[in-house]
Image 1: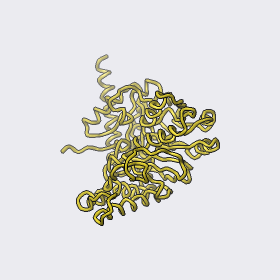
Image 2: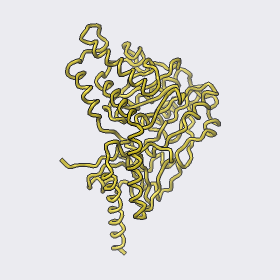
Image 3: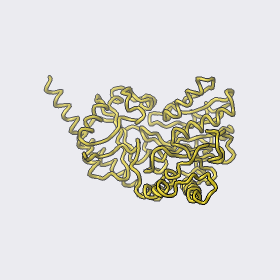
Image 4: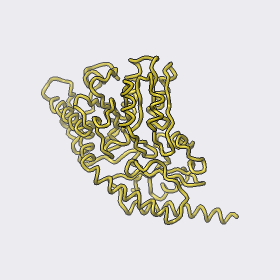
Length: 383
């Protein structure tokens, strides 16, 4: 089997080995339905309670404020629709232009059936300014702004934005899918009413996640049926994946500072190689960004070409958001930050994870330089 250097951790992460070991008993031995009253199901029920408590502790919430879902897209849909629908079409929804498609397309769906949505612009670093929100927030039902952007890594000043929304009595949701497990997140400190998370972004299984809903938030159920998740999200619980999610999140939260230091070293190692070789590139995003997320736009190049050439060299990166991997158009995020087409078409995202090494960062840097040098030589030979 070919060995790959995996540097697309913003798309998904490898499963934590300890999390995998913890989930196995709930697949092979304690597979009882947690909703059943007999003793065989008690271990599963207790495992859900324990996982809920661990996750709550990791984000500064109460266990009863954690609702398990199938992942970030579901959580985002529930948060926005679940608040917008009770308030009705007389109240608008406010979001930013650089949100994940699961937020933007949810807003578009509501817009198509008569709701009003404000899509707020960001500055060239991808930051939503407080003044911009303050001008738009009046007469809204919910504001939804992501904590960290999946393409360029920018971290928003959510606490300040929440303050503006709450002054007007408006509920605030944040998509923390790209942030949780990588930076410190405390819902009490942020002040948010809802927060979405997806397990596969922090070394847990795909297909599971959660929505934090602050007590007293008037949200309607996502799925009607049984009494699972306090009657808010019916369906037999995915116990094994929930257990793994709690273990992986706890492990990442415990190691956040150590991982951050390592990832920043990997970033600098890569960028120093590009600088030393005088590569014409722009680093996208803000200085306040998710550690390890490196979005660069190389002048006059094709990000798609770079991705495929690196793939042939055994290196996995992205041209931007994984959700746009089949779309060669400039992403909505790059358009929103005002990046010129000359640079935007040459955008790649290298997202390091805690398992990457210095040697891998060096190889990625030199591989990019090699590809670009070859392209220059080929162009010279045609003159």
